[in-house]
Length: 185
Image 1 (cartoon, helix red, strand yellow):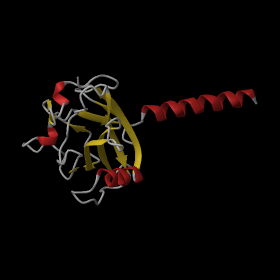
Image 2 (image 1 turned 60 degrees about the horizontal axis):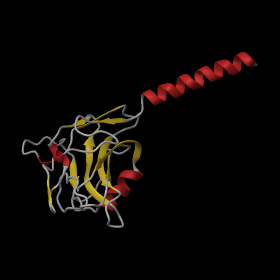
Image 3 (image 1 turned 90 degrees about the horizontal axis):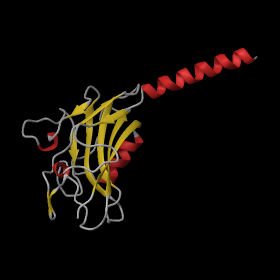
Image 4 (image 1 turned 45 degrees about the vertical axis):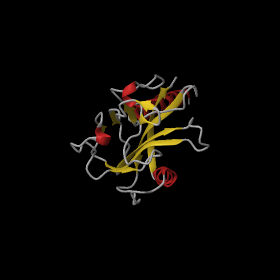
């Protein structure tokens, strides 16, 4: 009985380690989890003077059954009562695993073919950088990649952030998040 239990434990931990190794993971050359973003990712407008540059993002460990990806960037600390959507991208093909720095507004068409940038809370269909109110403290910016079980979310280009978030969450298989920070003095 003890030998069978030991074998079971070994198999369980091996399986758990394998699952952990295959989990969806988001990384970036431009932002770091738990660290302040640079002026490059600050919005240019509303009193902010940053470069408004979408950061490099790369992911790995795509779960089985993934048919597309979605990307969201959300500030839960914005003093709106509902947070602030900085970027939502849907219909990223399952073969794509990276978005390059500055792709959101690139005239070279660096966004993945077939993807759709949803209107953010600034009112544009691009990445909108950090711009918390002066003296409002540190805000958290949640950059999240979502592996989706559908090839395409059929949403209009003018879909709200809430509707887009609902449809993404209803079809998500796995997520990975980098929570970057920003403070404006």
